[in-house]
Length: 440
Ligand code: S3P
Image (cartoon, rainbow, N blue to C red):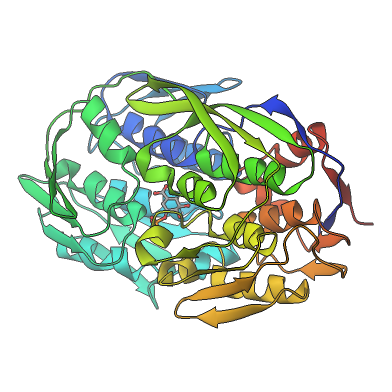
């Protein structure tokens, strides 16, 4: 095991950039592969998840050239992937798995998806159901990986009324519909991140998006050729949330993060930080490749507790681990509820957080698909605590950040998972002053 610990740190300071957004990186790799022409991707995330996806797309006949922080993808067109492999190893990535299941619906051959232990535990039922409705043959046990899929050239257009919010499932259906002869409709009852829609529109898909009361109605007509376009990807707001939060709880700290994606579907956490009294400033806003981008500063703050409802939780699903850590340093109680989807992430995040916070002797109570956390203010964590991460990168990073403002050490059991999303996390944190060490 690769154990690591973090300890009280004096102050964190610096101007940094975080890796390119992982969601956009994975989407453009797939969409670029299905487009006609060459896509140059600037600022791509070379996380382990993206690297595995690149390997898989290459196995399916796509030419991809990796450069330092960019990539070149030579698209093969919708329906143009080739069956040069019978098996795809998806590592830890739920996003790549779901999106590639969507992409392989368009291809008239059979492929088996396999993954690591954490991914093989994740339930894929909510995606398998609509894909079967589209006519795709899917074989698996208990709706989990390994999954064998046999696509065909023309998926059946469907109307999909999404009850459980998920950007991955919405995106998989959108990608599957690209070779459907007609109109596919997706009704999003709770809006989720919309990067797939933005990219599809940019590369010429026939897609229409309308608001109807609180719902979003997406209509896409298949069998329209996609035209490759160059894309620049800004920093991942979920990665920025972790680094920024470290500055909020560490005394005398100020960190500026340059060029962060601030798409409205990704900034709920930043809005919640303002409610928690956090000193956060978002400025220098501009648009890059149809996405909103800005620089953000985070300064040490006296946080106060807040309560999050179901819709808020759905929109900061990746930030709930770091939110829970901030809650322990806030004055008063905080809570989140209605996060059923949190149970089907890289780990069951409600369980991982409950166990981790309990190990730190934080007062924490289980609530309807959520937790109530009693804040201790700035004085915190008087015991050395060992955290089980269950191979969940966000749990590992959140608890390492907690150690920076704790009186005692926080040890995480395995840091290998961090490279699935943020390979330079440890070096970046050490560079700005974090007291992190390998445990011998
Ligand atoms: C992602 C969507 C989110 C998020 C995940 C990445 C994506 O999951 O948790 O880390 O790239 O579409 P949902 O599918 O639950 O929205």
